[in-house]
Amino acid sequence: KQDPKINLKLKEKIAEGIKRWKPQNIHADWVSKFIKINRPILTTNFDYLLEQSDNRISNYIEKQSHGGRFNPLKLKTNNAGRVFNYYYPWNAYYSNKSIKKCNEEFAIWHIHGFCDYVKSIRMGLSDYMGIVEQSRRLLYKSEGNPFNKSNKKEKWIGKNTWLDVFLNNNLLIVGLGLDVQEVSLRWLLIIREKLFQKYEEQGIRKKTWFILNKEFDSMPEGKKLFFEKLNIEIIHAPNSNCIYNKLPTII
Image 1 (cartoon, rainbow, N blue to C red):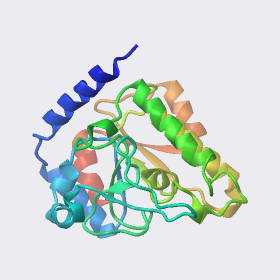
Image 2: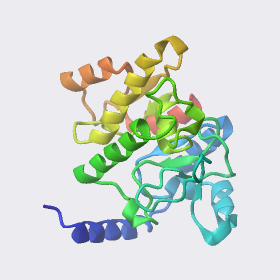
Image 3: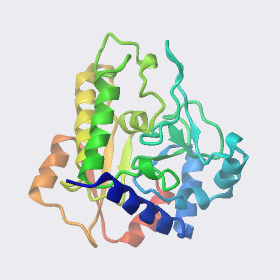
């Protein structure tokens, strides 16, 4: 059985090392492009290389109240507004401005947590299953959940979280293998497809593209079948340079 104290110490060491990293030009290129088209970015990284690559973001963060590095998007419900959660800060984002609608504005969302908040870091099967359980609470047990047609979606407690971004936007998946160990993301892609099928008549279906880096990655038959069943389009790229240097200019 995994010792929680050892696990936390490991995350602290990882976070400590990550904070020494410096952004590269490619981080600035991607961020600049997404600010221009005003679209959200979802990242599974714990670092702040994207945020630090653009002064419009880093300067704005410095001006935020309470000296925080995050800005939670709160949802007012019949009870109370959602507060920042150190374990699952899913309503926290970084941007060059305050935003009101996560699906329509630029912001950077960290699916697997932030290095500044070590308890939020998700790595390994136990943590990934925690994402699944937290997602299930938001999707099935909360008021306004997307799977209940009679519910008012504006009351959904998952609104304006990265889960909302994941489910309700076109997805361009870059730099992820999406192999069998990535159980939480695979499960969420299945949930996403179920939602599209449930509301097919309402035309809510969004597109999903997976960039396959032929320089490093392969596409086994099982994985290919998984993508086909979920209507994920595979885009073959010859190498990393083609993906990271050319892709931002054609999004």
